[in-house]
Length: 126
Image (cartoon, rainbow, N blue to C red; front, side, top):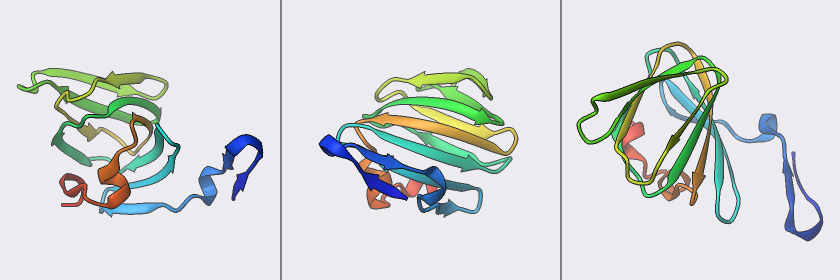
């Protein structure tokens, strides 16, 4: 259910948001405001998010499971982010991730990811 309330505010329920199947191991739900986007990202164990970067600042909060990230141009910096932990990723920092187990993460982007909204995120759709 999506409900408009006073002064332009909108109330959402995750279970009512469409779940997009991006590939065999990754699905997501999106909610977008004017300047930010929040996503529930569902990754099956073994899912690889290929190396990429974007102009958007990103905050990743793991609700369930764990992701291994490789960060930087050379991908030498590695960090495992587990349930209850948060990783901030600045604009234009190359990164890659692997789901170490079935994982639900919340990703927040500023500004919203236009490639996700338009379906032009081909790096995820392989």
